[in-house]
Length: 296
Image 1: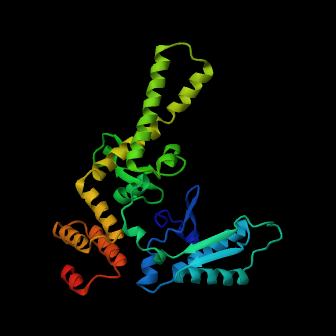
Image 2: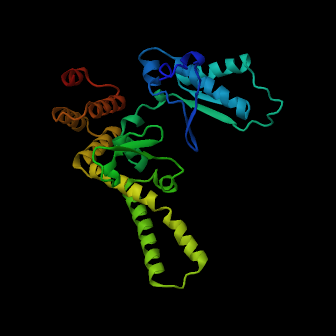
């Protein structure tokens, strides 16, 4: 486009190191999706440098962080790099005052490989499991959100600016349904009361109108929760969660092995099979060679 408009020669194109991207009011992300793969498999630790650099940039805004705690090889390396950066490019403390950040804790993903192999069961977790949250939003068919546009995709924002989502994101799906139903019923009752009587004061009417502003949020999460329930209510989902619990509790080796063999035969998605295999291996100190060779 720039060439077509004959302006590209007048531009200087350079790199802009964005580093931390604010995804929510309490979430900053480097969006380095493949950093674990790069570090562990490819031996490329450049993402560790980016982590240290991002923290160092924060220090220029909030002051030098006095306490850096690290657990794991990569985290320790990031902490060391940060120390070097503080020496090579020190933050001027003249106008900073007391640092606003007291402690940073760096944790390797390697420290806990079990958790990401388990199914997420909160409302936000299920949204991520089934719809995949990217950059604070999910992309779904318009029909799921109640629109009469089959085949068209819409982006649904998921962050703390949505007050209802902020309230329900960490709740179990069944509890979410109850909360949303309660809020919808409450507004419905208020509407019936306003419609049937003429005794409300202006302030009461104002409060009612303010509550009506939450209707789009309620409708949004009713649609999403209904979509999630269509998956979470399936016997296969419950069976998977149950077998994960058995694996974590190291109850019955044969039951777990037979279940994994069964979902392979049913040609379940490869990601599902691999997550269970990895979880099974992590909690059992590896798989017996005979069983591994058979499954392979």
